[in-house]
Length: 390
Image 1: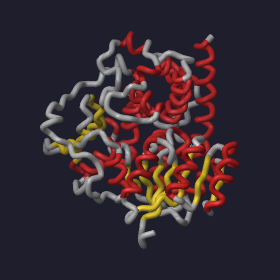
Image 2: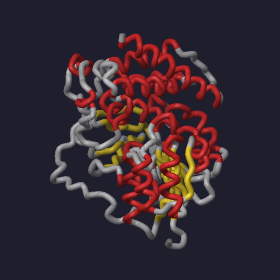
Image 3: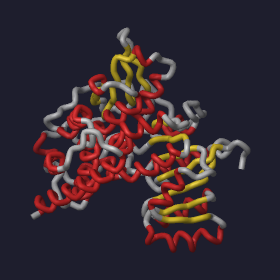
Image 4: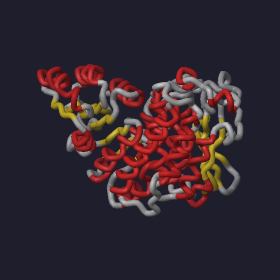
């Protein structure tokens, strides 16, 4: 191992971001080492990754998969563990310099909190952490040495555009959206869309849950919420615009009328590398963007009538409290039901709306309130889905 090599913990190593992070680490062994690998349920892939990268720890969240993990890796001298507490401990481990939070959904919240309390730098790819408890996370960061480097392509773009700029000169943040697979579909077509159709994203190769969120444009609502907390910008100064080519990843408009944009081909390796490098750049991370090939850049106003989930962003930020936590919990349950063909695509928004109306609102939540809200909202969303399915 190269001296001063950065020790990386990857939470969600078997997912799309996790696998791309490992590919980057493999290409730059002089810079990075995967010291901790954490997966949810994909134990076979985790075992393969651990054999290949030889981390100090390999952890599986699913307790039932632990015996297989232990038996496979113990002969190699790789320490193993399982369960949510082990995942939290991994985020705070002494052998870790930076934590890549590449898990999807609410599951990223507690490990991110553990990393902040331990003062670990974070490459944040789990947007739900800031959606569910952005105000709480922001307060923790004020008392921590942790630095957060965004990995979402949109937030990485904004982060890059803001470097060297006076925050007081920012007029607004402009988050770009591809429009997803249903950009040109009618409202009736969208409502009847199948899971197979929703999973065909035109530009990005992502996991199933994130791809469905892109199809509903709820992912863009979540990105607006995340941007509010990451960059400390008032919600009314954050907007989304549809950019079908996904070459401009987001923009910052300044008070003098100037706009800075970060451009590149749709490739998550670039924002991952920028985060791991702590805002420094590495040679040949991504394919270069040939502007003579990508010579048509267009923009459209998002249609809230066809994509009502996008409107949940400013609703949640204006409402405050635990509203965004409710939305996230209901969406996770609804998306899972849609992928099981239990509900229609148009029902995802209906489940979220009904859950918002029936779950207790807490204007000034403490941490335990977020945990309780997540549980209550999931139960209510599941109940609504059962009624829809009858």
